[in-house]
Length: 172
Image (cartoon, rainbow, N blue to C red):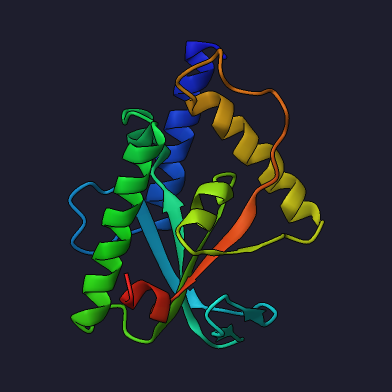
């Protein structure tokens, strides 16, 4: 993908984060994940540990800072370590009484195989215009921000929801 196209997506990514006023995870030093705390309005979701997410629950939606992650070595052990650091920051915030009432966190990502290794509950997204947009958008971001142009597949991947309950975070 051209350098100009890549820069366009970086500017758009920055704009989205600013427009939505996404805060980084509390106490994070690396600041690669935003967390958007809000009241859940969807269908019930059963998580691996038996927690049930219902309408009215407080949840945190995680968003990757694609611009910062672009500058980080994307080897599995490095990405895993960064994710664990960010989850540890959420855990510490919960222990300190911050993120009051947070029942779970989730993200929509193409990186669901990595999230599954960390105990996240993986949930398919039902086909809808929103899902079609997510598939297109996440795959465009994958191409725009990938580092090694030779290793990456051109096959469209399907994003999935990746959920982790408060209890699972506190056990980390």
